[in-house]
Amino acid sequence: MRHLIVGTGSMAETHARAFSAIEGCELVAGVDTDKARLADFCTMFGIEHAFTDLDEAIAWGAFDSVSNVTPDRVHHPTTMKLVAAGKHILCEKPLAENARLADEMTEAAEAAGVVNMVNLSYRSQAVMQKAHDLVAEGAIGDIRHVEAAYLQSWLVANNWGDWRTEDRWLWRLSQAHGSQGVLGDVGVHILDFASFVCGRDPVSVHCRLNTFPKAEGDRIGEYQLDANDSFVMSVAFEGGALGTIHASRFATGYVNQQRLVVFGTEGAVEVGFGKGEPTLRICSGDDVHTQAWRPVAAPPVPAIYETYAAAVQAGRQAEPGFRRAARLQKIIDLGFESDSSGRALPLG
Image (tube, rainbow, N blue to C red; front, side, top):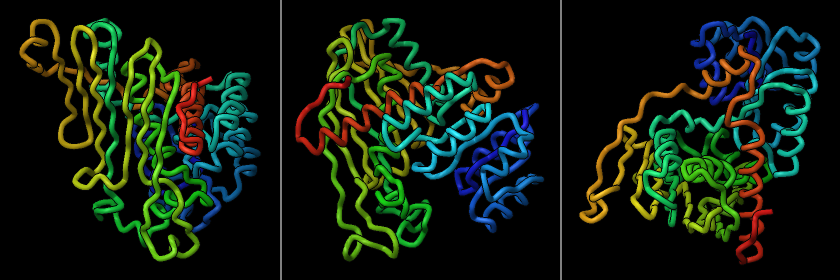
């Protein structure tokens, strides 16, 4: 599998390391409009070919698959070109800036017959997969209530660097630079987490967003700091269960943690990761009367990069695909619309 990486920023290094370690996968080229960054990246990973123009890379054509690690607003135009060229593609999340563009990407990829996946990387968490299986097997009965949270603190702490001076963080705070704020950036992960484990999607949402003052005039250099920093969403799931889903970059004391509790008629499961060892526990059977929780072992699962590579090598589609990501984008779009209207809105 000859693999090309489009966009050579910090996240591209994660892709490069992962694919370099997969048997049968060779990193053959990098693409970036920043010539210096591209050169450093290709040198770091021993990549022979470097292109500052995607069209030139496509004309060269000596690759089978692609990691699209461009900024969010560039996902659509770059992906559409690559799909038209018949290249398999793993795209970073969120898939697109809105559901309409995400649908276009999905339909194009499916029509072209290429393997298409989105990097919802937390699907690689064994505890997440095991929790999904427990719920699907009926271990907690019928779902009645859901709590989900994604907590980050990089607007408070400096463990990931200084957001006030680093472009790789500042763009995430600016709508003009393609950011959908915390709702689009990590909301896509927690929405996928909650709905995947539950085995059902929201059918309506009521969302509140907030953008907090962070600098004089809400601007640092070219970056207008107007993307949302926190969201709280109440949802109704298929089957009638209610849930609360929220995320913030002001969650002091939490670097990058996700937590989910699913309550059912015969028990509950709680799963979390991002702070210490991933955890999964269940309260079911006679334990529901004493509120006792017991840990559950979760067998290892392949990383999403491995899943994607195996799918390309086998010529078969794997999940999470573009269609899943497009569905999540519809929920995100509805969250913005709900915040603007102040109403709960149904998911069409």
